[in-house]
Image (cartoon, rainbow, N blue to C red; front, side):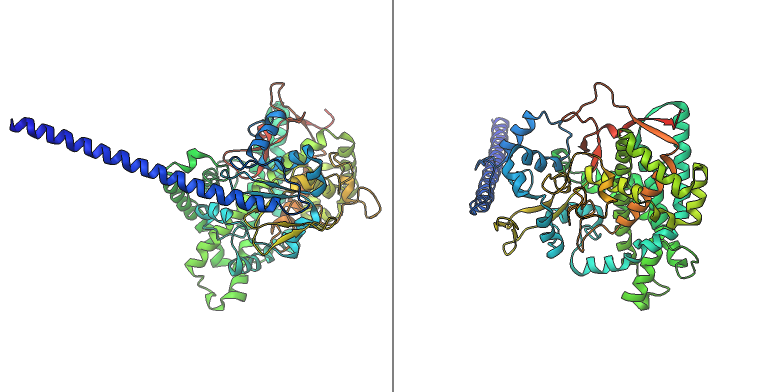
Length: 552
C-alpha cells in the first residue's frame, strides 16, 4: 500500500507540473497575442493618419495585413524572383500606380516584417531629409549594427561620436591623399590584369564579382592599412571573419538567424578574430605614423588627426579604448569599400559588353590620354596619377553604371515634428513612425527627372550644357547620397573604378555568360539580388562572364 501511495503521489506531481507548464505557456501565448494586437493597432492607426492627409495617394491598405497583400500580389503578377533585391519594390509600385510615380513617394506599411517604410525617390524631396535637415539614422539600423561594430562606425553612429570620426578620417579620404596612393593601387590592379589574362587563355566562364571583390579588398587594404592583403592570391582571415558577421545580421528578416541562440556567441568569436588580426596593422601604424615619408594611409592620417585635434596628450601613447574604436571604423571601411565597388565594377563590364559603341568611345579616350600602347598605361598612371582626372568619359561610364545599378539607398528616421513638402503640390507628408528610405534605384530611373532613364548613356555626365536633355537634374544623381552624411569613400571608389577600367578595358572583352536556365526579371538576367549573407544589392549569379583578349 505504501508503495502504491507513493507512486500515485508521484504521478499526481508530474501531472501537476505539466498542468502548470501548459498554463504558463498558455499565458505567454496570450500575452504575446495581446502585445501583437496592441502593436498592430498602434502601427496601423499611425499609418492611416499619414494616409488621411489631403492629397496623399495611398495604395490599398488592409488593417490586418497593411500593404503586404498589395506588394505580394504585385510580386506574383510580375513573377519577381524570390532573390530580387528589396530596393526594387518602390520602383515597381511606381510603375504600377501612376500617382506614385508622379508624387515620387510611396508609403509602404510592411509591419511586422519591418517598420513602416516611406520610400522617397523624388530628388528634391530626398534632399529635404539628407541635405536640408539631415535626419538621424533609423534606430533599427543602429540596432542591427550593434554586434558588427557596436554602432560605433561612420554609417551608424550619431552626434559627437560621428562628428569626431568624420573629422578624423576626412584627410585620408581627400582626393589629394588618394592620388598619392595610386601607385600602390596600380600594383594591385596589375595582379587583377594578370588573372584576367589567365582566364582569357583558359577560356573559362567565371563569376566576375568574385574576381572584382578580391581586387577591391586588396585596394582598400592598401588605402586604409598600407599593407598588401593579397586577397587575389589567398584567403584573408580578417575578411572571412567580417563577411561571416555580416551574414548573421538580421536585415533580411531571416527567422533562422533571429531564433538561433548561438548567433551572439558566433558574433563574439568573429569580433575577436577580426580584432586580433587587425591590431598588428594598427600597432605598426601607431609606432610609425609620425615617421612615415611619402604617401600616407587613411589610418595614419586618422591617428595624426586624433593627436593633433582631439587629444594632444596621446602622442606616443594612443589609448587602447580609442584603438578599439578605430577597429570598428576600419571594419566598416573594409566592408563598404570593397563590396560596393566590386559590384559596380562587375556591372560596368556588363554594360560595356552590351553597348559596344560606348566601349569604343571609352577605348578611344584612353588611347588619347594614356597612349595607344596599353602596356604603357600602368607606368604612366603610376608616374602621374592626375591623368585619371583627365578621363571625363571614363568617369561618365562609372557614374552611369552607378546610376543604373546603385547598390544601396539611405535609411533615416522620421519624427513627429518633421514633414516632407512636395514642391509642386504643396502636400506635407507625415514621417512620424516611418522609416525614411531614400531609394536611389527608383530616383535614378525616374522619368520625371531623367531623359531616356533606362538607357546606358555616359554622355549624361560629360555634357556641360544645362539645356541638354541629358544633363542631370540637380540632386538627381545620388549613389553615394548627399549632404553631411554622404559616403566618405566616394572619391576612393570613383578613382579606383576609373583606374581599373583604364588598365583593363582595352585588353579584354567581357561577355556575359548567363545560361538559358538562368532566372531573369522583366527580361534582365543580371538583375540585382538580395544575398542572405549581404546587405547590399549584388548581380544575379555573381555576374557570370567569359573573358577574351580584345580583338581575338
